[in-house]
Image 1 (spheres, rainbow, N blue to C red):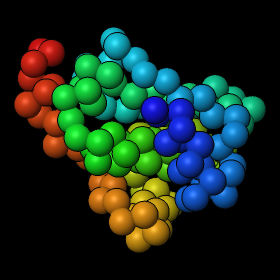
Image 2 (image 1 turned 30 degrees about the horizontal axis):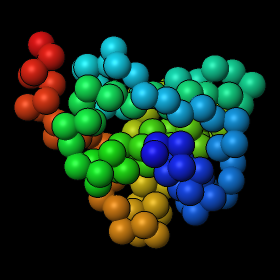
Image 3 (image 1 turned 180 degrees about the vertical axis):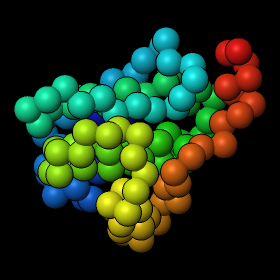
Image 4 (image 1 turned 90 degrees about the vertical axis):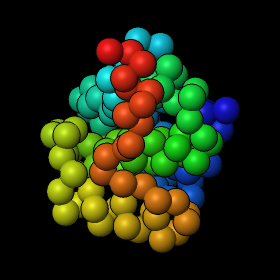
Length: 119
């Protein structure tokens, strides 16, 4: 359950700061595995591609969710409006969460085969 994972990760790695962030599956997203959209006033939405991630392992789901949660954390805490940014702050939190969780969050995914199914 993605909601349960989100709640668990928010508490474990993001200091409970993502309470105003919504997370949902999206059937229409086929060009990227995840997306974080800033809504303003500390609100943002994490969307996960059901068509792409349903074909992947739980590990890929977890790492995609954590990747998007880092974007959400930067939006909420730093007002980072550039959702494409994978700069120093993103890398700092990516390294921190990887170390704490044992995950292997990266800047880009390797879901090329699945993407090709939707082109």
